[in-house]
Image (tube, rainbow, N blue to C red; front, side, top):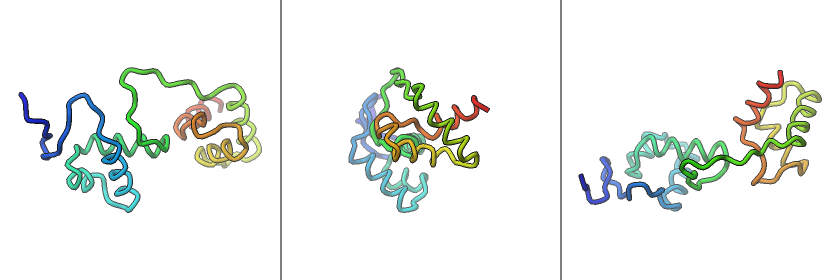
Amino acid sequence: TDNNGLNQLGGKFINGRPLPDEVRHKIVHLAQEGVRPCEISRRMKVSHGCVSKILGRFFETGSIKPGVIGGSKPKVATGSVVQNIAAYKLENPTMFAWEIRERLLKDGVCNNETVPSVSSINRLLACSV
């Protein structure tokens, strides 16, 4: 059925196309102001699932860019990254994954493109216990 490019909330969309960057920016901006995802969904006329996905990706990667459908993610946890994570954890066993991520950037082990996500770091830590 053709619904003239409107979703159930009355928002414009083109099936199979990512939301425009300005809409993504606005969703992230509202979340940073403390607006709840269900309210963002209503205001922006974007499905709750879509809002959650954009926010989840933003908080994990710092990017508002849409993911590649079916693409494989590049492997960021190279040997030196894994070694550094292990060394940080030995040095400070109570260090959180987000602190490790910041330290990898600060120490120049990684840049914004190559730093592993917090969830990747947590996965590595869970494996190396």
